[in-house]
Amino acid sequence: MDISARIETAISRAIAEGQAGAAPPKLASALEYALTPGGARIRPTICLNVARACGDDKPGLADAAAISIELIHCASLVHDDMPCFDDADIRRGKPALHKAYGEPLALLTGDSLIVAGFEVLARAAHHDCERAIELIRILGQRTGMPFGICAGQGWESEEKIDLSAYHRAKTGALFIAATSMGAVAAGHEAEPWEELGDRIGEAFQVADDLKDALLDAEEMGKPAGQDVANARPSAVTELGVDGAVQRFKDILSGAIASIPSCPGEAQLAQMVRMMAERLIPAPARQAAE
Amino acid sequence: MDISARIETAISRAIAEGQAGAAPPKLASALEYALTPGGARIRPTICLNVARACGDDKPGLADAAAISIELIHCASLVHDDMPCFDDADIRRGKPALHKAYGEPLALLTGDSLIVAGFEVLARAAHHDCERAIELIRILGQRTGMPFGICAGQGWESEEKIDLSAYHRAKTGALFIAATSMGAVAAGHEAEPWEELGDRIGEAFQVADDLKDALLDAEEMGKPAGQDVANARPSAVTELGVDGAVQRFKDILSGAIASIPSCPGEAQLAQMVRMMAERLIPAPARQAAE
Image (cartoon, rainbow over all chains, first blue to last red; front, side, top):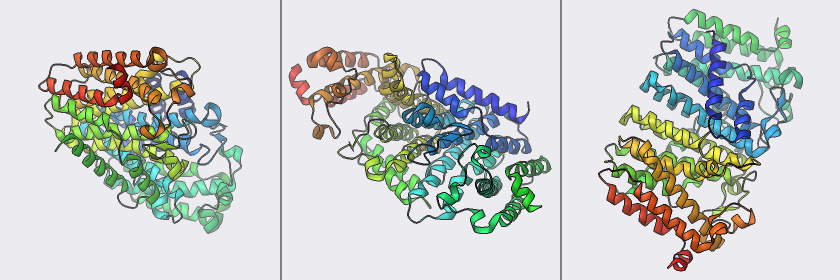
């Protein structure tokens, strides 16, 4: 099965688990709304590519790792879109979940998806108990406090922001989870894989800044021009479009150089390059050529 | 160490883990605000008493199980108090977390506490990997969808409520988690212990109905008379005070009768009786005598 099919199959299974038995129908439907149709599924794709590069000897565990990260990512989108944060009306080209289902169900959908992320890993533990525990540990670390995406979002409530801690937690954390959990699922150590995730996260942040500056809301599937509107730090504001594209390329080279030696090293480098290609919006690619 | 000291020590450790390193200070402080000073710590107390009754051969794992449930319980209080649910101003006699820290940090505090619940169990897995995975599986099942407290809360957004599924999930789920996780932490099967948790949950619901009807806001540390005000189903509305007290006693007898045979059976029955005594508000005890 190709990676995209593995991801969608595992997502469908997670949705079915959440909807089983006497589940309250609206919340059950909201879970599916939050997870499908998916975005680019970048994090689980990275996770499975790393697992493959490491031999992928327990594919059931790698699938669980990949999906657990996507569940947490979707939970964060649902909660971040709520009125007390971004108050976003659209997401992935359709009404944000709190607009479609109301705030109470949006809050519960996010909570349920966080829980589902850990449940998916617990259900896959029969493949390898020790690895499953390590995956759960990493997922927790990269989601909660003090280093996860919750911490990253928490920095936005501070007057003085530790910018490096902020970016590493808010954008980087789930990319670090993606690379290190892909490795752990295949029986490798987590630590040597953290730098790759960290750098992909940085590249992603710069690509996001470029998209926010260059695309309109329809192309993005969500509001554009938010960095300038909210006076957020952005690579484009700091360096201009060409400078940001150059920084993106530098980060990408560093990411590829950081890939630990493993059976599928060359193929993985190719995948990272291709994925990066797709991240940069066309107007920026043209500007840089 | 007595059970109460074990709980507070483990809670303090969980708070310290969440506040380590470069954590955003307000969110770090909000975690502590949500967890201390505690309420009655009923769920972790039940969990540790069941673990003791089953031999408590891995106390570190039992402590983690007990605390993980309390973390989820406190997360649910923080989220339930938010404006889109109960819009509560006070909790445990002090301002509700969203009143003290604002809505964004309340949302993130709940999210972080859910994650912390699973992290605590992953960190204790070195005691016994298989048991830790089973504990994580139960915690997920009793927290998320379709059977956990998220599902219970989700029923409140439905026009037609499945009342039995609603109560079992909303109030019962974490009591079932408490008894079955206490057993699993000590190497026993979960299933025979579910009925005890289920019945304690029912008794707790009736006691809560009695408190809501008979105590004032100061005695409760939160608003009183909410069942009548919100037209919620209540044992007192249905049966009167005496009838509700009688139902409480019947449920309690059933709970004690359901305790599986184990080394500490008699002591556990005594604990359940003592705890129940404290649950019923004084005016109802007097009315029933």
